[in-house]
Length: 85
Image (cartoon, rainbow, N blue to C red; front, side):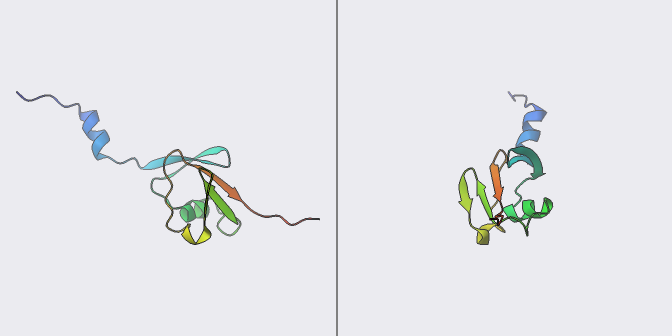
């Protein structure tokens, strides 16, 4: 006897989610799945402005931004430094 398999179940297993949701400085945003931190910064036009980044409260060093991949539901905090007196 062959059990019937729900096609939606198969589709969910086979098709990888194309986009992910990331909370950036408190705002939910959608990005391509498996985007690196640097790719997200470029998409936001912030690659030259951000001085520090934290994912889920963990600092990510700048030399890792090009390989650090974010996941669906991650919380990304982007910081820049402003001089003043």
